[in-house]
Image: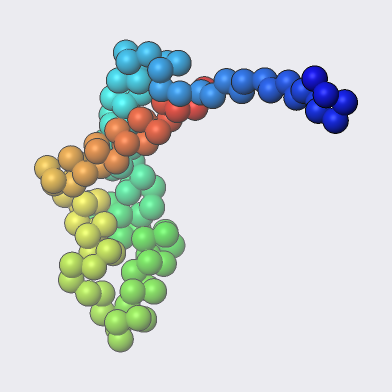
Length: 116
């Protein structure tokens, strides 16, 4: 080694990856994410005020409905976000909505598998 050259020691940094969990644990987190999302969605809708009896007074849903009504000149648009959430709160999630919620929960579960 010459006088002007220095050696630098480089340590390898261990990165967490999906392989650290193994395929079974990764699949379990994906499944758990899907189940939690499907079970939790109706609970969250009810807590936000979107119930089978209508939008609960003083709830987040009522505030959303008020804002939508002001934005639309006094009425809530059919097919809008508030109307869709109210329909889901009143009648439950449709098959397509359940599949979308399950897919989203599964994706979150998969992303969770990257963290310890």
